[in-house]
Image 1 (spheres, rainbow, N blue to C red):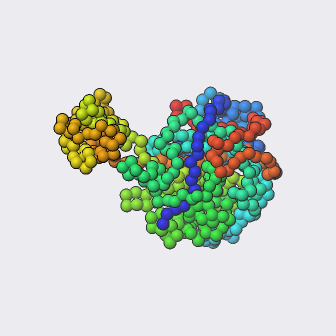
Image 2 (image 1 turned 135 degrees about the vertical axis):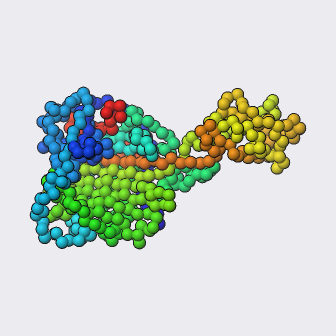
Image 3 (image 1 turned 60 degrees about the vertical axis):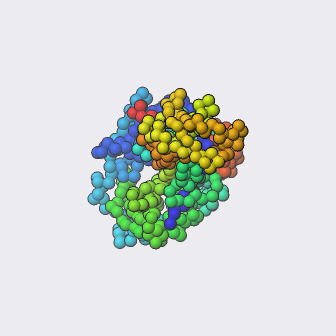
Length: 516
């Protein structure tokens, strides 16, 4: 059985942004590990930012005149208040976060009546209460969007694109894809990070062999022809907002299928500051996912009211050699007044793309003056295999051509296959006719990096798309004019003009390794 995920490759462009920031990094006080996806907001305001996977964040320096402190919160940690005056404007601020789980291990849970509930029943109650815990009326938020890639065994951002968008939602009673309005305020390609054209090509989802076939694909997955751009498809993977429609395998339609498709286990309670949350782990039923694929994750549910705070969902493909991540979704909501609103969504999917550096021949031409073929390769051929004439076979009109010798050309990536003199008389004067009757086969040749000629290999790449809420308006009307077109990439949408107040939004770009 294959998994269904919705993918769209963005076409990218744009310029850089130059703004002064306070830069911070959140770290676990015990392990020193980064604290990812933590909420960093101005104290007593509905404006803030989310730390990235490395625990990094940045805030405009002007915020020092707008608020006294920032408040940092993250599931599993105590909420921390830090004075803006205590943060350096000139160097990276390291902020340590203290785990709340162990310190509150003896807290008595007030909802004693739920102690005996089975974990699947807790999840059922959480889904049943989405209509009560999440907004049914209009709201809007300004968010920072980004997409980027990581290659396996590399830790640098590649092809990083960033945007500021506004999402105006009529409420959970309405179909998100049909009624939600979007505005694009800013879009850019971040030129501080490396670009890689080989991983930006569109998905064709079939492997390539010997230069023929396809070049970028997601193993054991199908791509839905749903349509929409990278932002609208990312938002479709918010299974809470879209709990009444199909989102992705194997959540499917959350209201109807999530509980039926998974086994559940109740883990030790976890805390958001001092607020106790159920932690329910789960894994797909083999009857649903099949034997090759499986998914697992955790869902965090508030005690007493069953509000869903967070879902971690990862789907894997199992082979005899390895277990490979196919896609991973991190989705978190936070309470604002009495209701839960989106905090962030991070979607990471795995794909393979053909390596540009695979050893191959670029072209072959016949040179009458040399009485031979000049072969140009993309890398330097290894001498022993490249100069062995038994590794070359040329035929004209089906008859073999006698090879006298093989030698190096004018540059190190060039090989000349010289024919015997007797073969000259067999060539026709018309070059086009000669080409149509010529056949050749080259085998057993390697380059100096020991790569076999025409052997196709693939790079493993992770594609990330993420949306982080920065400013929330819980009462804003959804009636605004927008020129945003959901069916074309963000880079092709025209940014809206907007009154830019300092607390509105900013690019929370990743920190360069050199700045750490």
